[in-house]
Amino acid sequence: MSGGGILHVLLEFAFYYPLIMSLIWMSGGVIYFLRWERNEPMRVKPPELSEYPMVFLVVPCHNEGEQVRETIAHLASQQYPNFEIIAINDGSTDDTGAQLDQLLEQYPRLRVIHMSSNQGKAMGLRAAALASNADYLVCVDGDALLDDYATHWLISHMLESPRVAAVTGNPRIRNRSTLLGKLQVGEFSSIIGLIKRAQRVYGRIFTVSGVIACFRKSALHDVGYWNTDMVTEDIDVSWRLQMRHWEIHYEPNALCWILMPETLRGLWKQRLRWAQGGSEVLLRYTSKLFKWRQRRMWPVALEYVMSLLWSYSMAIIITLWVVGHFIPLPDSLRINTLLPQWHGVVLGAICLLQFLISLLVDRRYETRIGRNYYWMIWYPLVYWLLNTATSIVAMPKALLKRKGTRAVWVSPDRGLR
Image 1 (cartoon, rainbow, N blue to C red):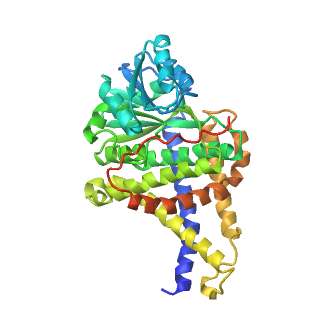
Image 2: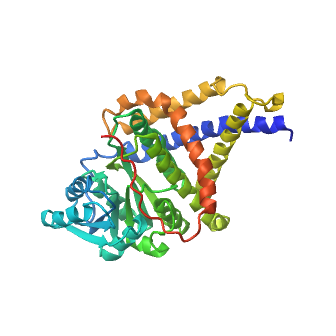
Image 3: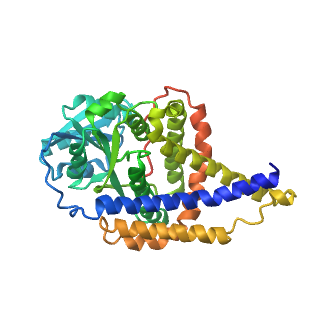
């Protein structure tokens, strides 16, 4: 194939991949809404359960002194009758451990595990799972605020079927003081929310949310709990559970309010970690995916591979455009402009349609969420470029990472509040 033919293929792929995926996500989101959400009771009036088994609410903490009291208070206010709280102080260098010890007197259901050094989130979760005597674990981050009814909604899935290994909740953005914060409000509903709904409809979910997820302990034991050498333990455990033929569900009523980066540096570090985690999982488990028994994982894996190919395609297109300003290129390789032409108009219209659909679905969880969609016109410019760059950088990092290297805590950017 000539250089012009290759460039034509790249340009077509760069256009059709996001177009087709948006249509898949929108259709899947609508199907999910019509099948499961439309006739659900109000979030604050969850259905009665056949039983209320013991649940351990697990919160791993590393330098969470500014947030931990608020997090524990929300866990303690769960409208679920049978639970205890396990907080893991994972080698914090601030006053997290002292604050947790003080909270023991205030909250009788609270238990605290102190680890002398930074062992990483996966090890903290392992310690809590092994220390608990409950069949179900609801895991949240140390800076997250769990909605009062979240545990009830999560456990309802566990009681539906013994094959449900995990249920991922619905993270909502707390900090919205900057453009990046406002964009993430729309992203978590119109992009992440729709993707999880679509993946639930079509078979397998790429990952539970690391900030809010419920696990069946017997399923975790079956796969060996969380791996301590993966950058994103949530993606890794999701793949291993589903490759062992356990099911993962999505529960949008299980709200959890989280802090997200609102600086470009913090956002870059977060998204690079997510991208590297996805690449690590793909590299580790690709050989096992070729078995016929793993066919239900193929769409999830293919979607991720295609997203990587799209990122590298965009990188080549941008590179040719930049090089063309300094070196004369043949017409077959020249990119005249990166400004949106009719392709960009179509993608922009589809993007806005996706935001509209997600708004109509998501407004039952936030009544005033629509005011943040004014800013979503900037999403493709900011986040498509960011995700492209992080995907390109992450794959070499995953390839070069030495197997067995412990993934430990690095305190994230929690935004401007």
